[in-house]
Length: 199
Image 1 (cartoon, rainbow, N blue to C red):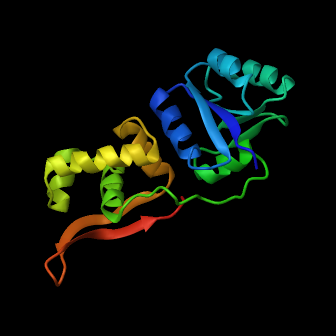
Image 2: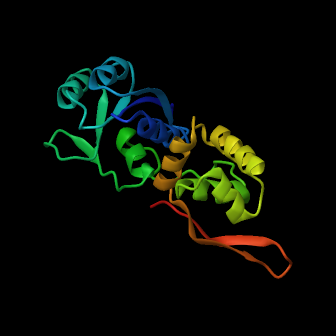
Image 3: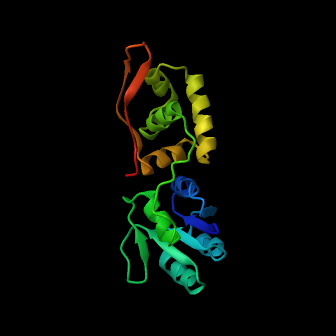
């Protein structure tokens, strides 16, 4: 399938960036813009295949109607709507949004993010809201090492900052269960039990 262009319009820029980053993991989807108003969504979305839009944006319904008339697929991120609307619950996994935006793509969660086990540990703790110093203490590593891991995570996931990475972790089910560091039989440190499944 030829990759399709998508615009993400959400009133909170960091949330929009996190959604775009999660969608970019699908080879069939190319996020081309992140915007924070319905007017920008209409402008940028008119040249895209689909738009994921926050229904709470002022003018969202009117912008969606104009986009649909122009042949652009519009998917609302939560909220209540009429029969014409395609909506995906904010409680749904990103895979549900991906298949709503681009009908026909496989309904699966691409795992090719390239993160190492330690990077998944750091990302899970970032997703829980821990600061670098707290992560370092919990994993038994230096703050400098945590920052180096975070930098690699941002690059691999294509996200701009910690908030977007935390959103990515939350929407993709990357978390620690318990998160208590314990020493293994060979002296190595383990952190909790890991769950990396789509919520």
